[in-house]
Image 1 (cartoon, rainbow, N blue to C red):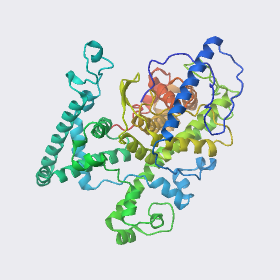
Image 2: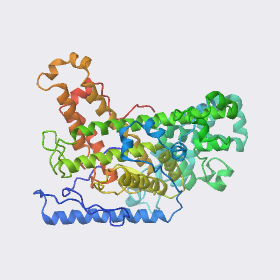
Image 3: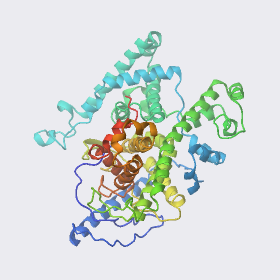
Image 4: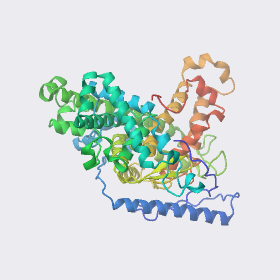
Length: 551
């Protein structure tokens, strides 16, 4: 999501006050030896006061969320430092049945052939829709109301927002029915004449789109957010969007998960351990097909897909953590990771040991988040389509829908607490524990889930380039480039610069908060073209930090 704009006020070095209301064990920061000459004491106090107020506001928001109805989430608890010394699959093999079940229950089910047809329909309809351009526009509080309009909540060309939404919804429905007719004439004509079938068709199409996105974060880049805004507005502004049943309950069909599929056929987790590669016990594929039918096979293949996806995302973080270890004892050398406020764009001052710990803990948190991405996607869907009201706010990144997301907040705080308590080698948590959700930094859960889905896309090019530079075949092709500095030096320099300045607080106000760590990494990515080693990235096949791009 990039770094926040318009937030260039300088901050004092180190960390400000830790969260006062947190029940976790607080860690006092070591005294810093180097005072910043750039800021006066008066400025430092002013900035500390501002950060303190921001943290209190975040804590206040979290306390309000605690009073709402929040689904209880049990994240896996059996986690230790040794788990980060092995692959994700090996880690899964050590877990008991309850732990495995907690990690696979939210995995989205594979699409059937019929559902893939629905996916094509919804993607094609969203491609030609200009919903967000017509609905999420500057209204009364920004432009029109201040220039003579006396009626608030005006939208495009003076029409009310509700009227615009209804018109856009009707247009989308007509397009979807038309696409269904062209795809399957008999089914299309049948659905168009029956209101109940029509409502079921729309529910199925939107559920398939959401499920497909949760299983494939790199897909639907240009259409997913548009679809979620359409569904959100149907609850708040136009309940008559798809049919009578929706008017009554205002509920969208939930994403179809492995847990739901297993309940339908009474499948036990013990039966599938062998076929998903976690144990030698359990039924074979032939036995599963005989006992549970094709539905049982679909569940197995869905779990395999989910485990493979988690293994890839966790594997990238696992590899970068392993590369970080080579800098552990380099504090007194030219490879030190120490950073200083104002130098190289850094917004923090930390010694080598402090910054090493800060980077290591941040990466461990990301690894733990990658384990629970399926859970976070389901909670994201639940929060955004909860029917809670939203505000259209200019966050500095354009007009965004600001909405509270208690389920995602509850899940990420449990993941954070688990990381702090079991994965920090007995050392205190370095930096702030504030999680920005439902504020100007992270307006809604769509922003949150999108940012963390892109963690592997940030880390993969860095790893790929550093590894490729050590390949003999690659070195032989461009020997002249390494006349002064050998490839190993370049590889180490790239990793060192990434560990230093992708975690230096340069992308956010706080810098050391949970969201600020990832924003700082995106800030580093945005300036890749300015770095001296950028040509090496290009020679190694670098195309960007956007991952495998697909609409």
